[in-house]
Length: 228
Image 1: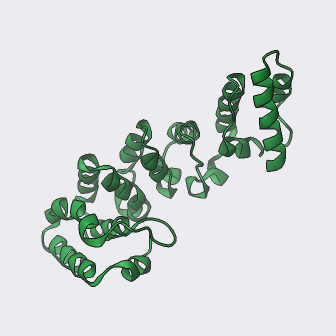
Image 2 (image 1 turned 180 degrees about the vertical axis):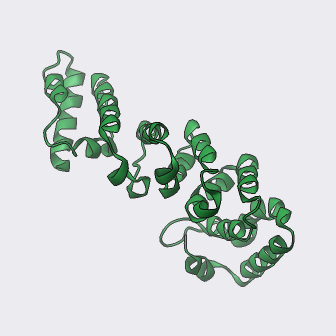
Image 3 (image 1 turned 90 degrees about the vertical axis):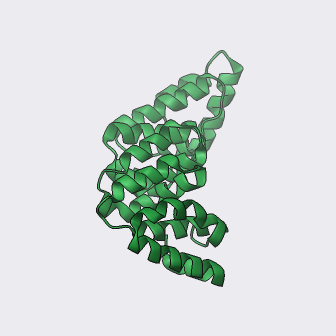
């Protein structure tokens, strides 16, 4: 999230409100409890070039105005009591706050991943999660994204953290989909394509008695071939 994108999108009234809000937080950090929810109403919700929305960028600026002492507790409270947009803003702000938060934001990431709101799941799979989650939680985060029809994307840190155990889990997920006659999501197929050879189980599914399994296996094989 960059400040330049926000500054270019704010109206004069929105800019005045944000400046006043930052001054209030500097004088009384607890003021953020009322100001954080109000950011969308005063600053707008338009999408910004490069990702995010005006209210998300404005909320990040409000969070950055908080003193380091108590930042984790206030950030957690804003997430817990916020609506979906406010929760998403907190999750997307975690990478920018990581140096001050340490591991305190991982509970918020895990909370988002336990739910079924794909907007929150996508927001949670960011560089903060990729760096801070333990191996077990990280692997389950990637599987949750795949189950939810999401592509983890480059921010999820797969180039660094994709290991043999996660590969096994993705393989099991793909096998279950094919066995049920269902398509394997493209994101899962791209992970499977990292292996040097086509998976042996896919060849067996191509010869399955159930035509739905054979068709699903054929589609997965063709998609894998295109991914290599």
